[in-house]
Image 1 (tube, rainbow, N blue to C red):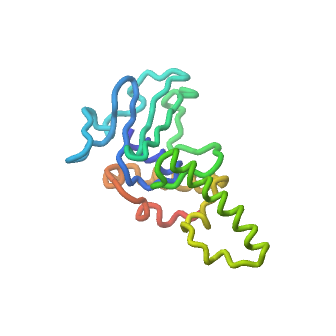
Image 2: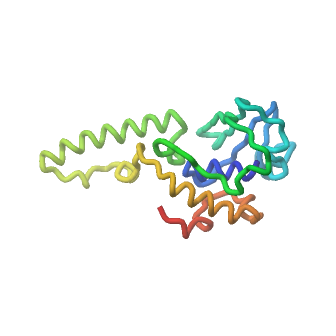
Image 3: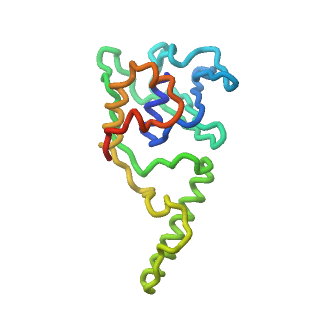
Length: 186
């Protein structure tokens, strides 16, 4: 399950800065930290294959207990273990994932609306010959593309993740992925 957390982080484009947990079959699983959250079972020793999954079974993954990004995960298909791919692959996606530190779902909605409103007004200013570079706006207004999703980039990072999965430093990592994904280019 610790690996699944990192898969979610890669797919979402997040940097593993916050605590997380899985809630499945009536129990919470995560990595315990001194002075922080404690779990009875270590997520590094619990495997999804330990459970008798059926199609349409669901569980939740919660990331960043402050912003509270909660994902409901539904089992779409159960393969025999001999058929399962060694490396997870993203088969499709839509839209960019919310950046970290935007205030959860409500904060993301508001910031995206603010970005859209700014871009709409900036367009009018450009047409009027004004310099919009002087606007005091957050940097991500210029760079964040909410409609963009790069499946190939996600799959490159997933492949790299699975080169690292046996590295105990990686599975215990809490913090940015810069060191591990430095050579993966978008």
